[in-house]
Picture (cartoon, rainbow, N blue to C red):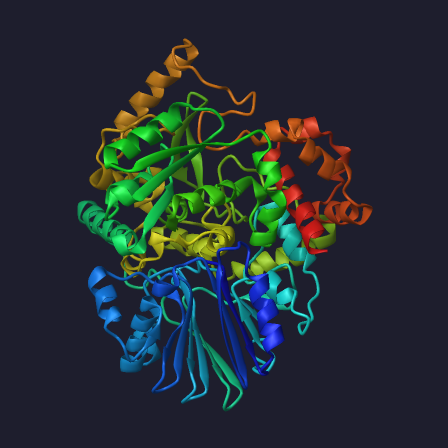
Length: 608
């Protein structure tokens, strides 16, 4: 899928056609354009049109456009096939039918990570719905000024509109370098803002008014207190969410598989494993690729090993920033290079389990490592004080504010976290902070990110309505050390195949985890466990040794050394000191920072 573009206030076929082209990143994408007197909408997508194209009801003139996917069970798809009074994709037929029967409230809590646009000419109202977690990107230009408003799933597409005037937001760029993300709702353009998670936006063209409301908020009705019951409920919800997104009618499916605990869910809960490919990325075959293959074989899924070459990440830099809008670091640009492979395989649906870390494993809750006799253990305990950062990773030290933007960045952070506790003494305190960091999910680094929605026929099963409801009742104490998550994975996938990250079984007890950690520590010390050691390109896992690229890639070095003077000056101002004063060998020891530099340098090159 690629996205939506809507213009309110004029009928300009040339303008909407050009907007559609700016949302098209690959040749196989479909374009559908609707345009009448005061409204133009473009739909651009890799999704099968038979299933997901815009829908139209001739009797009322109501139209539905969706970017992303709303999930349905097989009986719903079959019912849509009989809706001859509605034309268009089956999914949008179902949405339109519900709208006609129950108005906008009947479709507000749509079941998926999707943006839904509803145009009702009877009331002259355009409705726009974002998803529960804000996983699917959605941006607005001048929403309150109805005639002149632009709605799009891509901020850069709006900024490139010749009828729109924008100015660069350098504060957001400085935040990206420091925190891996901008502070929502800000983008790299002062005039373009994120729309909000779980939002119902409405433009009344007859009265030229704009309104917005929130249709869902988590953590409003207390928390579960029975762990076993919650394990069963969440396992059932996850299994069903994956099943309905891998139905045979949706075609061949691909998921990015590792030897960890999250991606294996997709293998063991797929409706038809024989129609799924498990794609594992590596530099050279290693223990994790072996476990990935073993997981696929156990689940009946076809395993595909995808070996990255020595210029993999540098080669995809420009395409990566053009698709992500540089709101996703190039260090996370793992999957873009598999696009051609998936096309050759005939894949119609791409899935991943990226969101698990944020939603159910407490990845961005305030925590620290447990230590024993000065040794860091792979266990966490919660901190009592909130960390003033979007990324409270225990191992990450946030760089200082750049002097030129310090006051503005501090003000943004203060505004965004206003009303949240700084002392964390309860589950409620911790979850309030977690929610603010998570929502919108499309801003969160290293998660599904905006690239996935624009590069692939992508679906996020965590956006399922039932999963959102369960998320809303899970206490923070069950997230730390994957207490709940490990048991859920064990229930769905079994415990036979170990977690590649730690070497223990899914759902293992704390005592068992400690024993495995201690045993493997001694075995490594005795040389009985061989490791790559991250000295070269290859690593022991799925992800790359970014430092190797910094030291060895001619593409990176050339980009760095040939950066225009004005780009060097701006990056220096955004970072707070001159990065070119530090040798590349030193940046190889801080590769995450360097790859964020490269993200912006490539972005400016592509954009300007």
